[in-house]
Image: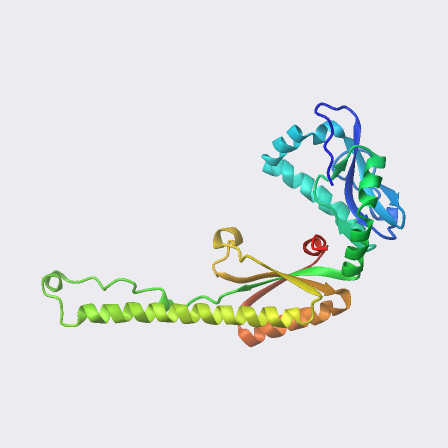
Length: 270
């Protein structure tokens, strides 16, 4: 969908943020976008694209590759893009387009997007009056006696030369016990994660299971055992919040609920 401008071009290109239906242009008036001229609506028959004219030279392959290696600059563009998409989605059903979706001009954008009109209509029917919600479940911390004593107790000098009878067998039994309790702890956490996922799916229109995030990414002490996202009708939002609270109380585990978000995860599957 993205057309790159010629290297070194000094002309304008058309940057597309989203395709929507029934948008009020006031929704994005005054937003800076990704830097360029004012935001505007580009009619596509019964649909509308939210676009901005930008300096084509800022979006050549070389410029964008350089930007990809600058985390701060990339984040600035991502936030600007998301701000426009969110403002549009707040007033009408909206299909967000990927960051840096670019066409050579309005006419090329209109042609390219119109060719996908049927897909956009299908997605809009699916996500209208829905939002995306994230649910993360964390395993409870293991009991203290499960995390210590993984090595034999320090022996006195006399014990080093004369092990007590049965000491080695006792040590192995203790190790096996710790391992067994850890496996039971992990299995119980996974069982709770499946229960949470099943019950939340019961009130969702669609869902996606994502790979649980590693401790280094979450910055949490507890292991994440469920990382999922759900497409939920707006009128079920209170039901979701209530269900999450009930599941926390019933299971005793930490369950994080986040949202509502623009349903980015559910627009590319159609």
